[in-house]
Image (spheres, rainbow, N blue to C red):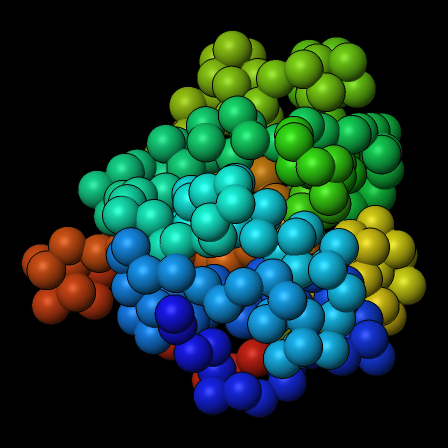
Length: 268
């Protein structure tokens, strides 16, 4: 039976992250780094309770999440074992950005929180190289199976799309699909990633504590040779990751990824 994390207790009720999620992350990391391998048994529920100082309900929720992620197999009356294809649900580097978006759409449900035309904030106008009112859309994505909040997206789009991108349409179809249906052909998307602390609203929407770390992904999408819209995504690092992939040629040439050391206040 596997030894998990050398017996250290790493979960805390004061962290702002639920205990079952913390335990899930500890076990996930042990599997990911090969400390427990395919076919190997995890410690028993009782052993995990004692090691991490948590209840059996907490342990069972963490194990259920690992099973749902395809990382372990739970055998009634026997125990939990690392799945033979435990990494099968990891992102395939060959998949496209659009494939990733389609997967997100399949695994989540969306709530439209705001949808109206309003003045564009100066930092967003600067990124889009134009001022004036724009259609502002804020949405919350939740896991389809658990209802857990995963990410908050905020978009600033041409005001002319107001009749197309209605709250009903945005709740029922992906943004990129609605844009293509409106005749918008995206040519390029530029992303930048940063870390920030969760303010009151983002913390409330993501179900986390004020001041906890949040991943911010800002995207400028281009169409017809110019910036078309700005999209900002806030993610909890306890529930989500941002994955990048490059071919060997891309890596050699530096295409698709750069590191800048001029980080200022995150936008949005």
